[in-house]
Length: 573
Image 1 (cartoon, one colour):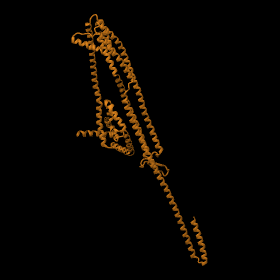
Image 2: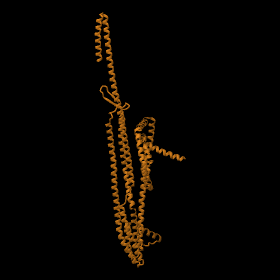
Image 3: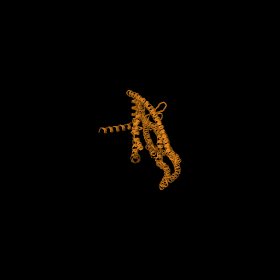
Image 4: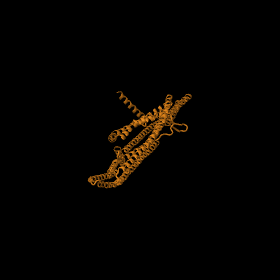
């Protein structure tokens, strides 16, 4: 139970590191990069990410295990792309939209606060200094250790090479001694009448040995064994030497024809592995550049979008409008409008699409180069095999004729006792020769039409294509999200501006109405004051001059008439 708990804890720890650091946009990247500046922490975490990645182990098993390569990987790869991968893309799209719209700003703020805390906290700085000192000591030891190992390895290698050279010299001396001893024993034991014949056979055997590389060793072993066991050398007959040569030749050609396809596949596989190792850093750099450029444009667009909702201040003297951010703290260089945002989106799409086109062209050019190089390797292998087969067949067709002569000569010496046996043996060798010749020709045709195994490079290119499509899709989706967000922000601002404009118009109307009412009230006050003044004057005149009743009545009547006419005039006005 304790072991299981340890395993589960270790797995959880690794997954936490991968979640915290390994992804490109992980939360812990800024913190770890800061630490990496002094203690190179990122170097070790990169190793953890590499060896805990499923892709690393998949490549290892793909290279080492044939069953995994042919059966397990294709099945699960197809299952993944048919069922899991579409769901992953859909969920990733929704998660990215949610993160970029709601969480990204808060996460970046938290990251900045963490970095600021690390930069300003004294305890953290002291800890980092101590870790840095320790790391410097370890780095110094690490730098010196390879030199020590290389020096010792060079000494051991030098000793090994010198020992190997001495051993080769001893073997050559021993070989020369055995050959010389064997030839001397042959000359001592051969009959006088056959000396010329054995001399010719020996020279022929030596020449054939230089072509096949096997007969001299057989003769040496035979002669050496005979000398050691019986203290006398029994010379091989000419017929036996020829048969040994034929068997050695037959074995050599047969093995070569059997291995020619494996040799071609191995050459191409080595070439493909070297090309993949050469391409991968370049492609990874292009991917990083693509993501960096996209992130740069995203940051520019997001910064502008944050300033769509802004405040302003109007200078009373000049009437100039100055714009600030939503909080009113930072002055803006310009008022964000729809054409400005549209230009930012167009610039981003233009540069991102150009980089995407560059990556696609790089992949296409590499694929074309692979096709040409594989065709060149294939043609070279066919040409090499043709040349080798032509020489071997031509030389041994001549040797087959010599075998017949030797067989006939052997029959004459043995008084035709084994005539049928030697003749059957000769026919048997000719049949084997013809059969092997046909096989060589068939192997050549098969080599020409041989299907090259491109599984490794196809898988690599497929993975690269999938990675690029995923990155491009995420970039496009995020641009779409930003466009939608910008449209919403502009609509919100337009609605706000419209409400402000309506409020302003209503305020102007209210002010006009207030002024009108004030004017009417003032006019009414003036009228009342004038009427009151007129009434007072009339009363004063009546008190001072006593008049008759008729005269007063007539005068009042005239006054009333004048008063009524004035009031009507005022009312008319």
